[in-house]
Length: 315
Image (cartoon, rainbow, N blue to C red; front, side, top):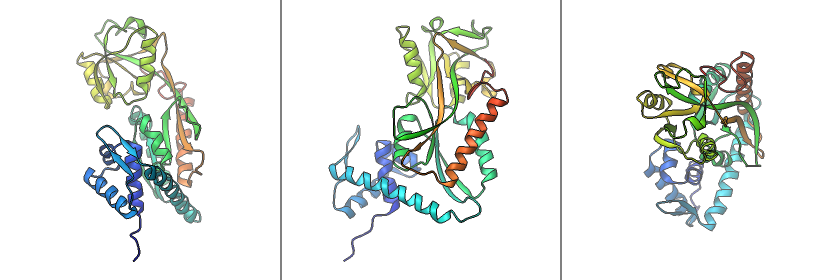
């Protein structure tokens, strides 16, 4: 009797649970129901005759056999991607899926133009875009769930290849009627005691904010958090607190009634880069995405929008 074969779908579901750190986050990342994920893992374990995952309320822990299977799953999916790309190299135009990941803190500003340009040049590529904070982005790269990702530096991982895109800094956002509304910049020490509205805790830029506050012997007095820039600006406009966001976000209709100031002492700067695995050769579509991204940011600099992502617009 032939044993049931493990499917690519089950491999993807298994790696999603491992990389996302749980069944709920895996279902959200894959846009399928949690029961479907759970059933897929149960079927996989039954096929293999081994327990792969120890389930708990706080974390997902791999068994010894689960760790062995994780390495197999990552290798198999990487080889499957390479195979598909090898078989498609003879095609005149680029076709097929391309999985990319972008950081949610700046995705709505930096990437719409890139997406429009890429899709117009390569209409045959099915672009799959995921927004993912840095703590979950790198595991997705390693697990083969995304081929190329934009992330905020610095990172300590040595197994990733980085392609620099640009630099940005954090700004203070205040209502027009605020005492600082007539200023162009302010020192962090001047507002360190005020309530602030921040992006969600899993956004990497919060580490820059915490470090800057620590230099003044303080911690941010968070009066609200959100992952949506529209809601954050609405809370600032309503007087919930002052906002601290990348300068790239300080443009657009949501800035009505608000003013962005350059934060000084210290200036909270960060760099954005594309990342790929060093052990993975980019597909032709991945190379095309990289070239479009780099070209977009290069043209932004040449057009005088500033020395990085957000430039000085609105500051």
